[in-house]
Image 1 (cartoon, rainbow over the protein chains, first blue to last red):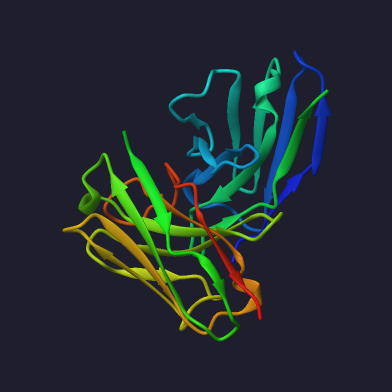
Image 2: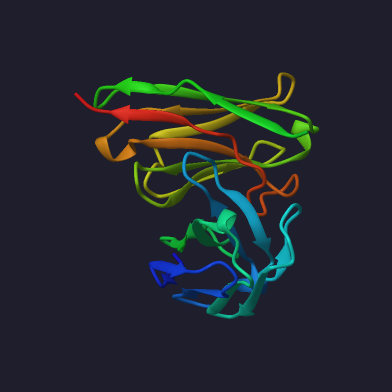
Length: 108
Length: 120
């Protein structure tokens, strides 16, 4: 089973700043099969990025994903108040599909 | 618009059973693999099971032998039969649509979920 470790646990930033979220895998993720989800309180998660760097429908280009192998990054440039959420990475390169423990982004 | 709505959650005693349903609309249900993903209260996400468009299924080790995923393509419903429930199965259970007929593994969209509480 691939274990995903996200860091930091919590990120507290001001509007307009840049957020950098890390997701590290215990073994290489096949074919960059890495997704990111955004979850706001009381809501279901929403697919944000798939294939490590392809942005899902409905998200602005302030969100970008990158990485390969065991190291992946989600960047949010120019933070806005509505970006406050928990962000999860997930690998779907091998079963069982697994999630990281999440990074909470707080907007000051 | 794709919509997924779960039902069937509730309070059940340890060792008991529950059947969850997920009503799908807005897409050709039979053309897509579907998964169940759960989230324990205040915790992270755990993939539970997937069923392909043709009916083949896979399970997380934590539920293998106790849970059964199934689908009714004529009625556009996904199910999760949960037996021998344990306290650690307490979670919100979401159904989620996959990318394609064969399981691919990313989830878009998700239903709002139904809460299962296992407690005496």
